[in-house]
Image (tube, rainbow, N blue to C red):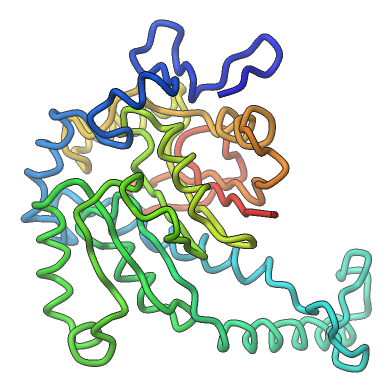
Amino acid sequence: MKVAGSSISVFNQVYRSSIRLYSASTAQNALKNTSITAEEMSHFNALASSWWDVEGPQRILHKMNLLRMDFIHSTIRDHLKLNKPGTPIEDEIYIPPYGIDLLPKEIKTRIVAEQESRRNEILKKSSLKALDVGCGGGILSESLARLPFIGSVKGIDLSNEVLEAAKMHRKKDPFFTSMHPKKLQYELTAIEDLSKGENYDIITMFEMLEHVTYPAKVLEEALSRVKVGGWVFISTINRDFISWFTTIFMGEHVLRIVPVGTHNLEKYIDQTEIKDWIEKDHETPKSFKVMKSSGCIYLPAYGWKFTSNPDVGNYFMAIQRQS
């Protein structure tokens, strides 16, 4: 990895004394570059049988899945190219060069309706290929596979127990067993073991970077497998006091909505660290761009909610391959 100025990316050094230091030599000698520790593997294996219990230990993930899907769907939809190169002028959708709110209401309504119609048309013809890295029991994988513009989903994980939970749940659903038997597949593998020619339109890595030993390697592997114009969606947690207080102290020990031992503050990653690595430190910064970052917070009496500050607590990030 490159060093930008006098600072070292979090992916090279999360803390100066951290064992998560990453370099090509240390990563190559690791058992699995994208693996989690034996303790964490044991922790998640123990949760396999209750993965799909919406009121069980993973209930907070079930609630968060609503935000996950909103973030993915809105990001893809909002960044569709409404006028492809070569589109006849008479068929082009008008895109104002200024704020649409400045237009009269009737004109604004018509323009928005035309844009939404074109987005629906584009998505209806789409059949995107998705990879869910660290899919666990398949909560997100199943939701992705239900989207009409998704052609196929592969969920990968390193825990055989949670993958079995995912496969068992898939078998109970006629949507996957009868109507779309090949749309959702699961595989026990690490992302670096996938074929180099296996590329995707969408790669998701939700609630997993804070658990792996080498987060830089995981993200690097994902970026190398996303198609031009495709998306890498991630969600993880900022390394700050509020994150510790909400996710560990309150979430695990007080409210007990998350199993004790799920999180480790030292493995949290600030969203600015990932953004800087993508746009400055990464070997091909011009090829990728962080298009969107959104914070989110869990409110016990409400559920998960987006916030305007991605620098505090949990956050989502959308990275698009430009070239």
